Length: 297
Image (cartoon, rainbow, N blue to C red; front, side, top):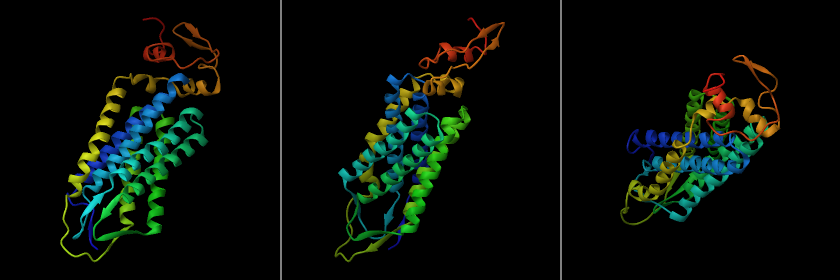
């Protein structure tokens, strides 16, 4: 049966990609922020990151699905299964970001966290598809293309996590969010390429609302949730993440000195010592970098 994933042209895929990239940017930002705060506050940032990435995946998927139609078939959605796919995305992605948040920037943590995050993308997609109901058709998948879609999600999500967590540059963080957006969108459209709709004989014409009319109310809550996360993140100072060195933050995990050794600064000396919990923006190491290596005001 003929299907069309681009009923509204480029509007749905472009909008969907933007939502995936925004959710990923917020989620990676929260995950990176978690590595700079004391352990007592880390879980909150990681949870917020999981919610942002999971919600971005969910909104990307169903905005893209607004443009999906099948010839002479009415498409509906099982609301409990659809919302459950959001919960699965947040839960599985949460496992990935918590691994990174509590094990630090080790190769094991970043690889494991990336793989699990990619699997969260795939899990959300296929559970969301399971919630799609057709009055005169059934879904069938090409197993090899499905496996390729999962591989795309895992590889791209892992690459995005590595970049965001290891290279402390604003431009690289933006690039990581775009790569994560590619992971979500690439996985989605590859998964849709694996899909075939087999017709079933049903008397009468297909009736009902369009996919856009059905999905728009479901998306209101997740979009507002992303807005809330964006506002919350926007109130937190960004400079600390970009300016505090990787060694400073790794000291929070390894118990090593933030400045291992003596470094002459402006006629004085900054001495290494035992690592304390990462300091908030505006004090300690953050202030040192903000002032360009000078003591005083």
